[in-house]
Image 1: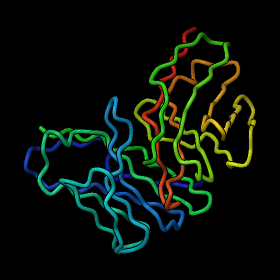
Image 2: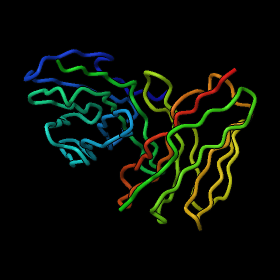
Image 3: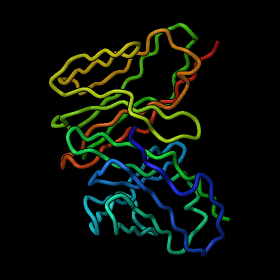
Image 4: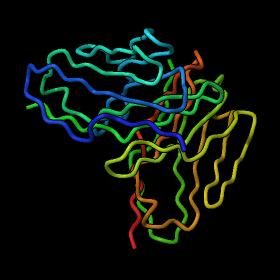
Length: 112
Length: 111
């Protein structure tokens, strides 16, 4: 059974803190993605990675960075958390053809 | 640019059929997808359809694709309260790397 896991289900951080969200997949997929989901805005792509050490900006990369040192692990970093980064963060990995994205359970981040 | 649009809400009674509609812009999309998100969870793939197909059926789910009008629909027969969720339509992007998602349709099923 395919599996994408995220390090935390719920996280509470203070403004200005550095925040790490980790995602691990066990399907040997090349592509991995980070989205944020907000009511009324749907899913917005933050960053994706198509190989180890490779990354591409998505639609809303500002305030975020990513790291992919190993194929199975993709980390999202909030360098200095702000209240407008309070959101649900979803990680996904995908097969190539067809592109089927498998999602983790999500991390609900609250920045105070 | 690429865009996927769907209505935001649908309310049905238990036992009725639900039809969720979606329009997309990229006619070169090879596959089109439906995902389901239950409260507090990530998205799970429900089904996908290859662009040269008109219809795909999987138990209570029927996907219809009108490529000329760039219209995709998901029909759920005999809708149950457990079908209450957000349903996302998606198409593959032009690079064939990622998916473009609609904003999601919240399906509410009342008993």
